[in-house]
Length: 305
Image (cartoon, rainbow, N blue to C red; front, top):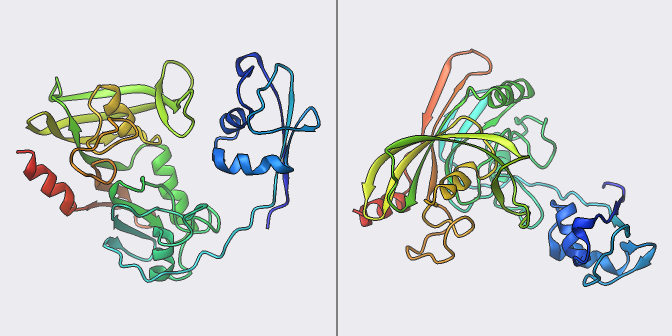
């Protein structure tokens, strides 16, 4: 169990007259607004006085927030079937299904890829990322399918992490985007960071953020849609989803970065991590895996012809 943590903020001009719960949500973007609102009974003060979540802040107000100790639950192995694309004593590459969360987090302590890996691999997973993320060196979104690599020891973890940092891992994604793409191929190079007003989303920024590079090419054109391949040069959060939406061609089913309507009754974005290529952390040889398109993706492609 962690000890309680105290945070202090002084309100600046750009925050003036904002609701305090909204301010704290922006300042502490790892916490949900609903969780923050529960803290107002005894953990949030302004100028040493308790306030309601609806309180509107003034310049130079001093906000204090006390986070109670967090209890880390036991992450239990679960006998969840895994589609293994490659495995040896150092690494395992699995084909993640749609709807599966990669690692445990508040609200998702069961049914995750980590729960499945703990059952499949036993204690043989790297510990570098802590008890909540054993073996996990990168992640893909809950509703993105396809290849993800996990590491069975700390040496493998360090080596794969180095390759990710140096952008030498081959990551090819397949997606279906809305609309008629002007070019058959192209490169999108922008800065990506937290959305300035919606902290749960990412956005293309003019300044700040991190460099993000996506290479795309059209594999097949359909009526008002395109089947594309995206090669990641960098791996920012929601990178492909943000980049394609910035061109005016959001991924089908992506209600976060595209239209709120979902005419194809999809569960999240149509995005599949198809190819993963890496230098083996022990032998140095190149290993490449290919995850077949999931059934829903194939059916959607056929229906769009």
